[in-house]
Length: 128
Image (tube, rainbow, N blue to C red; front, side, top):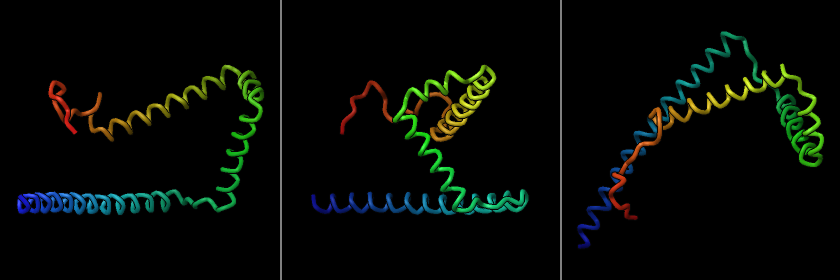
């Protein structure tokens, strides 16, 4: 009994080690590909990363606006009422694009167009 448990533990550990090594290799490879791609884009477009003050200002403005609208929700309603139809169309289009990007990311992550993969037959009872 003890030797069976030992053998099974060794098998599980070996399989976990194999999966971890494969995942680490893939992660390292795609990290290098992403680095090179980013480097090429930065070089060709002559981009410069933003400085620290730009980051601080952007996030400070975002944070202060959120706090302002939390403390005074009437201002949020007033801002919404000031929007003209062209602004609503523009923001609606941006929202649709964001939903589209999210959906494409979900499809890529699931590796399936509709729904999630089922790893067990639904008629079988699931045991934990």
